[in-house]
Image (cartoon, rainbow, N blue to C red):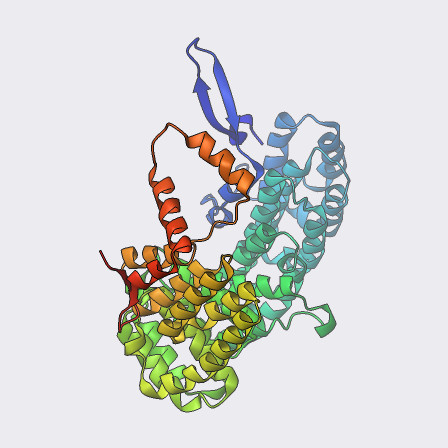
Length: 508
């Protein structure tokens, strides 16, 4: 790869000298665009007559560009087999073995040239190269080095071109194709899983009808390995394939995106949750109205109910109140099931945090069931406060704060007053204030009340005072003085009152 591929920025100093800032590995991986390889060169026939082949032309070019011993050895071995197209077709098995042998060679300096020639081998043979695709996939998987961004781009570029040339054959047996990619989909590096998913997404989008529905269901259940071999990495890879299949351009869903989502809803929860999260980050808010209508209908189906609520939770921050309420209303009759009730609670909490809903908007049929676990949670938190387990109490209160904001705020205030060390307090206030739709200034006041503690030792306080002596009282110092005064005079807290709508105000 060229030197300029690695350069991020050229800086010229005052003396006219150039300094180079190089891209980090993460930057280079981020710049890899697998989709660019899907744009195949338009030239339909090689120069030199009907018996000429692209492979021989490209081999001659690489002989001039790559003078390393590894490549010259490869060229000497393969040249007699690829002099023209009939010869290449006749010796295609030997050529495939030769390519794989040199790709398996450790520390080879000819990886990029050989991978480039491999794509031309597929271009010449087209469907004839399909019989060697499993061999090449195993070789590519072995050749991948996670810390070599240029090699990663070359390998996955070649895989993408294979997918382009063998599209018909690979789509026809798409389940077997995905099985060949399983090693890459379950790779420990997330960017390798992403590259493999981009290659597969191109193929899965080409499937139609029942075949597509079946492969989407298989992906949503990660059915491409033995049960004992399944792991979270493979599940994550399958969720990224679903995302690449359903995503469109410019923040839209693909034309078949809704069908992909509906087919995937009965799948494993961890796969659907990841799929929904990725899609929610990609799709813009103005393009989700149709999705919410389908989710409201899918909630009524037993096998799609949990998946629909997972999608509703992911898209809660990009939707209008009416769409969320439609899904909640459809889910209300099934909330006697604890799993469904917990999923609905997650949707409600996500809507509160995104300020798409307020507590008063939630239907009574939903609210009555949601408050039950909230009461148990608050009872547990209050018992912890009485036992002196303040931090654990705040963590419990944070999870149920959106379901009863008033009680959460009072609990946070009481815990801080008694413990002087309840750092999760502001998080409880944030969750409760989001449910109430509180203003930002009210939220800041709530957080300041729950953090008015100072655990510094006397020596640290004296040192801090000496440091700021003579510099005047900064805003931070004034805040600390007010907090100290409130601790010395408990009656000062009575100046703070709770209003009926649970927003905290201080008397002037």
